[in-house]
Image (cartoon, rainbow, N blue to C red; front, side, top):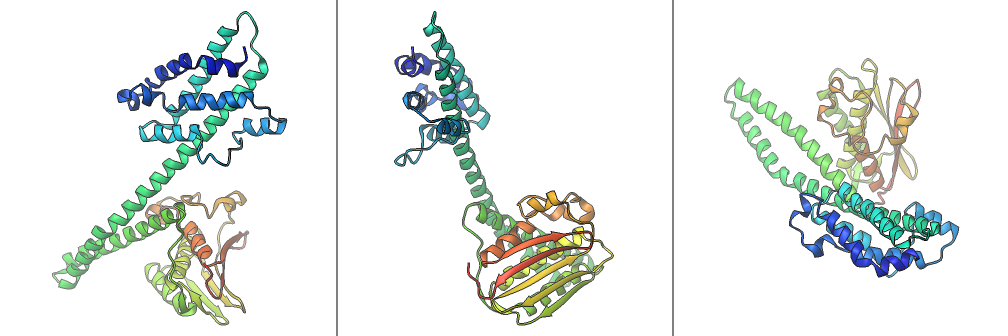
Length: 375
């Protein structure tokens, strides 16, 4: 008997075994009825049977073995994807979701081989069936993972947004205590509160920016006519006050007027300089060089120190990645590893780009910006 015919003719025994196994997926399955436990199993099996009856080329067979089978244009979601979404809503883990397919594969083949006796099962059907199950697994896991990531990003975004209000209250109260001039002890405590609050605010800002990009919303920018020279001078003055032990030079050339989000570009410069402070040689100067050209403005942040490994350069702008020396010696306990990623996203939001080059002499981060922002 061909496997496709067996699946359609003996659907109920297969579904019964699926339901029995799904009921062991605790604690999520503890209160699920038969209908919920069998969710979309019949549609998945019908799709597998249809696939087995459909002729395919060797190229299509190869693509399916990699979980890249084509989908009908009129099917926005497959049964496997919908099943993954509903299992996620019921609290199943991705491991439990995969286990369902593993059990389904075993039970179908076991029942079919028994039904074929004394004849030998057709090997081509076994191969095609495994390909179809692998495709269903790929669809389910891909959809499950995407939905889980979306939910996580939404949660983090809401958390970051909702934490801003109580944090602002803490900062305002600390500023009020500092202004009371109620003695050295109170003033020092207020200063510590404001310093810690500012660090928390920076972390929350990075978290909210990260989540906007992961949700496909992009970064908020508000372009206006600005003088980049004045903005950069102000940002570096603040960084020198926080890091008086480091020498930070600023070199300006040409016309640095343009239409950009000044606060965001200060954030880019701050992130790049802080990165240079963390990972550059502490006894050498950090140089910031900004040059105005006809159609664009370029600025670079240069620091001396060990050359970056070529493998590190491949992921240096990826989120939640930090250098190999991100211990407390660099003050990295207040970092989420988002600085370079956010700097890159801000450059992209302005229609520009950022790149890095590194050798034994120095490491340079170079930012290119169109003179008029084109988000």
